[in-house]
Length: 279
Length: 293
Image 1 (cartoon, rainbow over the protein chains, first blue to last red):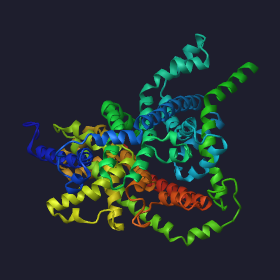
Image 2: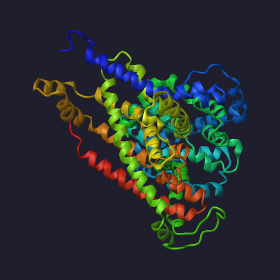
Image 3: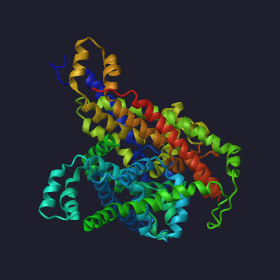
């Protein structure tokens, strides 16, 4: 049927409809960006028009008031250290649970998988208490340690599924050659985990970068640790109707993760697909 | 021999220890503590003191109309968004699996909202609903844009629904596209030769074959919708009044605004049971419909 023309008329109709829907999906970004360089008066007059003049100093003001470089660094440090730690501890644990399925390890695996259903709200208040007791509250490392705990289960599960398909022969050969168990893991198994590691890194990065509630509870009173979502929330609360400041703030706030996505798009989409099929 | 056992112990500690330690400290122990704090008058002002009050918190919850309203709100929200997001995502996946010229570009576009967190998305849409929609309404006179968006319980509800679907559909689309690409082609052709029309093909061949993907997508959307919090906080703050408070938001507000941590914990525990019940039932139902290709 479709042999004559690969690009038929119904396909054209579909294409036009899809492009129109795509434009609707993008329209919020148009509103934010175009209005972010207007004066407040011009925004209130007509929010849909392209700006008549560009007030770039909106951005300059916001950049300073948000203390953006500082806030950005906090988000970056928390995300990078948390993700690296999660990858290391969850892959090590998964490796051991696959290779030594003792009763204890089987129960541990089941408990971790079951724990994924617990909503954050069900532990958050007690977490405030525990993190105060353990002196984790109000420290950067405290937030990172919390992410280790909350990120472990899903990441371990993904590694577990992957390690099951890693052949034992290679490891046995290495042992015969005199490699220690730790050497086997770090020199042989760990490098083989790259495909699933991409998935783990991406899922955790998107989650931790955008997370709001955990840092709010764990930074305590220490405003120095404000991350991007927290900074923007506070900023937005202070400038509710002052859209000429709120909008450039939002534009700066979403820029890093959008850049991250556009550069690593291919990996992100593949990583998410792999993660959900396993999960 | 003894050396060997020592080495095994050592390995168990090195490989499993760190993860287990963090998990216990951050997730497991707080979770268990929740069962205790649920039955106390623990408050946010004096964190060290918690008196056992028995079933008092349950009595309070039973007569807490806000809580039951937020449960109703959350259930309605979950049903609407799970259907909406999955239907949209599936249609997008069907269209974007065809050889369109803009296919790759559109996949990026539809996925894009998903990488931004709920907090920032909520703020962006606050502007769209209050200022953007008003302007479009003035220019086009369409009644849809002239509604008092976010100003009433109904528009608040649908406002959150729109943003949630906008955010979620792309993610589910990616999963559906992968499932459609992995479908065996011969069954589809056999059905066509047997004279199945497009709709029959879709309903009787395609849908059963990608049922595993449907299970996953329904699970992810159900669980995310039922636990929706960030969007709620930044888009409507539960308002007007408390009319658009999700369950997760109600738990948060009880503890952090009213300083009633004990009551909040009890609500949080009920929330946990509700989440488990709903997601487990849903997975059980859809799993039964999965077939072997």
